[in-house]
Length: 621
Image (cartoon, rainbow, N blue to C red):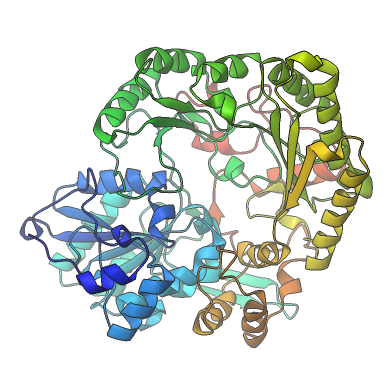
């Protein structure tokens, strides 16, 4: 019987002790004596968040199917346990074996969100692993990062040995085999990293040097060893129906943020929204086979006991066999108390018909994401959604019995005017008015409720808006006030609730999203000053971050409000995602000219993703 790393006394002192004991349903148990590679998979946030992450479930299943490999998990200890572990010198441990992380061969960290960067340092620190990669020798695990933020790894490059660029199902086995070979040959850590650098999709930051111009922009980004390629090409899964996917997902003992089973129906998106990073980095669109999805849905529900299944995709409505899949799920789970969650759907007659059949759906709101308040600005961002689409969808919803609608917008988008800002309130009012005009008083299910929410725009790498300046903190708040005041002027203001995101968090996210390698010092400064769990509003202290950035000899405005030349070298330009920089430039100019680009199913725009094309992708339809 394994011994827990934490005593009963400690577990009784902390919130949700089940976060730290492991032994969940479907947890993999292996004999340590029969394995030769130990891989710790980390999500740098609290357990409740990390256990909802599909990517870790997939990689956990993949690694544990490899001969001689044992993949275990670790999450960020919450602040109460963090304090105890530091005070009592308890090393960070894996949930499965409860063994210290520093004794593993690899520590793989998921890079899902920029605001988790200080939690990465917490993981290393509590594990007893030197924070800077240059200070780690053969005694410590190889630290590897992957996920959306690895598409600009430079702000955290100092802390990692390797970054995995792309989808994780492809070359990890090659990396494991290289590690074994290097160990067999008594090679050094540097020898192994040189082997890794020659594997597709793997970026070793120590093998690249960066020089800067006098204005702070990048002058050159060059490899310093022959093994390092000038360009690192992202890894892409060729056939999503011929790859790993968990039959027995892990089931937490406590409620996680998304307490449901997730079925990824496709990867990529055809829509081409110019603000959306996922829409470019995950191109081309690839669908999972219908029979594959049916089989996985049945097996996962049987092995987990979950009462809800979520169909995961950037745009579920674009899955070509959605009707057939939903018909199967509704028939298969009829009378079994299983809810079906349908995120990322366009609101049309088919979608509403399906939703009306799903248990308890009438208790929840319908969600529209117009993103902008006017058609002009929706054209700028290439949303591919007209006001008629929105109003028709709302009409169908109201006629179907719904009376609560959530609307998602962004403020601070390129070319935004006061009319665009006030358009958020005007559109919200039009939808509220439509309810009262369309539904007779005797048939209304109470008053209509419109919740309009606006986040603040952050330009992300590998989007057409990567050249766009951000607003200042004060400008974001001023724009939110313009919308709020306009809402208060609307006829149906009592039916509209308006809220907005925190401007401080947005500014820091903007700095880290487009930052360069020099920001590593600022992140380290912030962590040493106590910054942790920055993604959690109650723990985020903006003033500490401002000081950390200034103390690193940097300034926020350089990364946020500064205009960028079209030919500027970006910190992420060494990564080849298939989509070309020329295409992104063209789309940036189209945005400024308010030109709409058709989605991929209508017309190919020559983005470059065809170079990654495989049979069954939208590029070959």
